[in-house]
Amino acid sequence: MERRKLATLYRAKSDESYKAARLCLEQKLFRASCNRSWYSTMQIITAGVYQELNLTPQSKEYNFSHMSQCRIYRELCRAARMRSYEDLATLIAQALERRNDADYGIDTALTEEMAKRSLSTADQIRQVVYKIVGPAWQ
Image 1 (cartoon, rainbow, N blue to C red):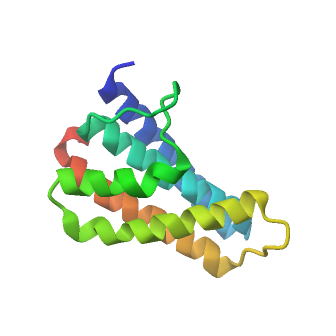
Image 2: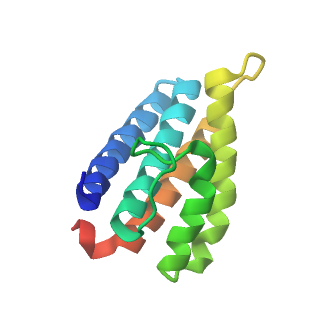
């Protein structure tokens, strides 16, 4: 599939996941909100990479690994000469931890505050990627 079409597809997925994360938070479904926030973050990074970089996933799928998100987000910022946003990669790693707790944790209680942080991270990363891609998505 052509890279720009993949970028459009992953941007739409991110938009949907972000809306779902917000709705889940409103309904006090904190695990689901953390999960959907993570996927919104991962999908917008993937969209940005397909739009702006010539990276390809190591797997045969179109998805980049969960563990690679911080690294490829930083590469996206560097390529766009937006290094001031690289520090947000720390938040990405924390959002992944909350997503893992949400999906696989047995003893972990996810709070409203945790869900809000995950949603905030998704929002911040989405804003940066939209700044990087800019007019290409308008």
